[in-house]
Length: 267
Image: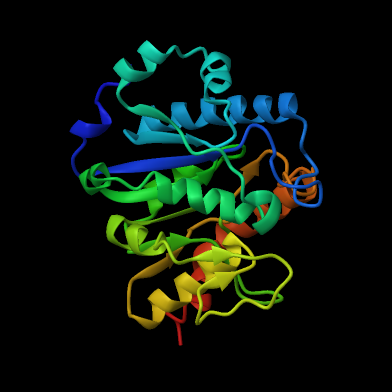
């Protein structure tokens, strides 16, 4: 059983899942755009996140911005009454997305996250954000081996520094800074950091992460390379295919050493 209400949580961790059951951007942003297919993706992934939340005593907030919150509830076999009484999971119907078609899916996701800002977030020490349509299979290991820095993220360094925005976490005060309202996303332009305009959530998260490093915040990389279960919405390809899984099996055991080298801990 899920035992505590979100409003009663103290010094805990919150997982926020972003969902758009009906793709509202153009086909160039969404190759995986059939509503029925996407709904199945979300139901499978959210069920896995719920199981993980029970094991780790996390609360979950599920955000949906395409008008299909009830479809998620029915697919997950959760009634509105059960959802309220279960306490540890909350579903929020966000404002209908009308911006992704023009500004890209990052703007729609960012607006969802910003809309969900509330005083209740002050009940939490740490906020995790995940794309609701995919599940990270090695989260249990990540949580066991990762002490809580100010921000934890997956960075790649080849061919350039880039942050993976599918799954990351940060302390609640940084979360509120991350969601400042003057951040906008525009596709097909040269982003201006002065104006806080970015082409994607990945670009913004990369900028934010490097900025916090410069401010001497404790930024940490995941102990393991993330293993995502699911398909990319933009390319409709399996994220962690057989070849990638084999590679991660080889690399993850030596990941702690690589991580130290990349973060400059070892001279």
